[in-house]
Amino acid sequence: MKANLKKLRKRRVFADEFKQSLVKEFDTGQFSVKELSRLHGIANSAIYRWIYKFSTFNQKGYRIIEMKESSNKKLKDLEQKVKNLEQIVGKKQIMIDYLEKMMEIAKDELDIDIKKNFNTSQSAGSGKTKKK
Image (cartoon, rainbow, N blue to C red):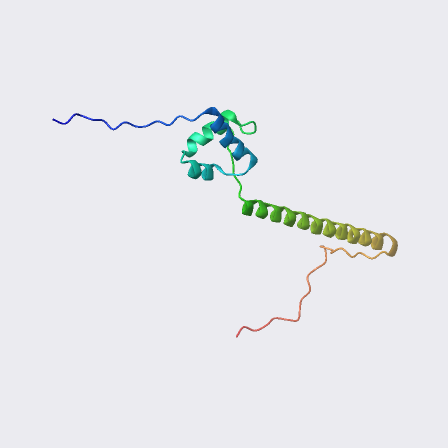
């Protein structure tokens, strides 16, 4: 007669020192949560719980975003591009201010109106063109 045997689930219990060492490895940036999970065979959710419990940087209720080096490089490149574009816009604004001041001086001192006058009538052009 076979006994009714249930498959017992083995529950692993980890020491707080082990948990804190994993959290320290995550906080220093040595490993990501995914890498720690693969390395030690522990579920991501357990590692995140430990991070929220033991980490000095991460608190519960805040999402942890892990960035890879390529993401960091891309972010730095985009920040540099924004900086360059801001410089270009600044130079263009200086040029616009300069030209507006020159037009104002030309009007005041030389009586030359450089700005477009919207009250002028349209020219007749060179005549009508025939459609082919």
